[in-house]
Length: 185
Image (tube, rainbow, N blue to C red; front, side, top):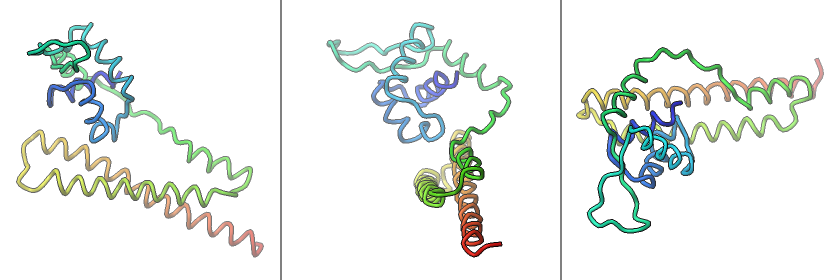
């Protein structure tokens, strides 16, 4: 249910074509709610049929021309209603955590390399988020909307910091287990 709301949010921030939306998802919303081009275009059609968005009239209509969409009052009302809904946190689903649990019964061969790979990916994402924070949120940007957007980015930063710390500890623990197994109890 959240993809249509992510699209409504993005369109309220700035009317856009489907292609522009997918690019914006790749640079912002997609960091915490990813969607493929096909999913975005399919959802745009559904939102338009539901009367939540409309394609802006084109000055020069032409076949194959990109449509730019804007949110209608019904779409704004739906998004506002959605922000007020109660929603419980979703349980975490992590293939890495499940694989580590499985390694406890089948052996840890290859796990250290995989943990190091994940550590590098999370460190790179953390570095990217920190760079975004520095570029996009200088002290003089202090509107309510800026503060809320910054809060979302801070959530991403803190999640990546968690993974960097946890993966570092997991690697240290795994190294200790492997060293103990090599030398004996």
